[in-house]
Image 1 (tube, rainbow over the protein chains, first blue to last red):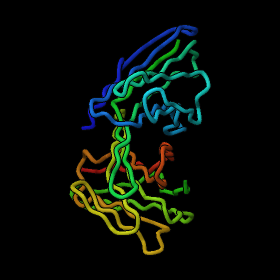
Image 2 (image 1 turned 120 degrees about the vertical axis):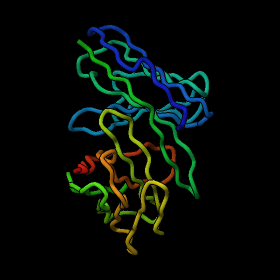
Image 3 (image 1 turned 135 degrees about the vertical axis):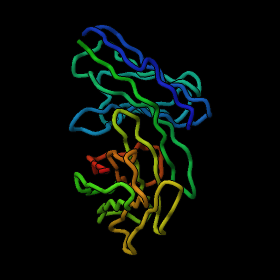
Image 4 (image 1 turned 90 degrees about the horizontal axis):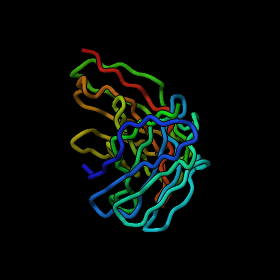
Length: 115
Length: 110
């Protein structure tokens, strides 16, 4: 258990409203990630963070912003939600493994529906 | 990261070994092979990884061919709870995220 929680776990919102999803970790991992998962697409990276206030874009970052003001929290914001952002969102942390390998551990996910 | 190829689905009888193959013929020397699985609606779960040697942990064994162009994940005694989508991922170290393909849907039959 990598001590990752996500909130909320489920949310329904209307098109055009702002939404913020929170990922919280308890073990001081430096790297954190936000993915989305849609049928037929697998998991796709939205944004990631490699330290406090250090973030970078992933392959599907349009329409999303992130913030990381402290190590334990990584926030994903949809400034103006659209129906295409209906998805399951997973947060992950990276743990350093043996040698130069590393493993990612995932949170339970947030199911977001935009109506 | 190198591309991987996995069968879309497999069946296995409960109690038998499940052998899940993965082809990664373009793997580079510094790339690891990772296996994850995703049980319905849950977040992906790390299983095992390796570079060139075979690896075993409490969940599974990973067999990597000598030329590193393919690997097999072995679940020695599959249970119904092992029914999931299994992802084989090849990645070098670094800050980048993992690239998940379509995976293999393993159905363990009673």
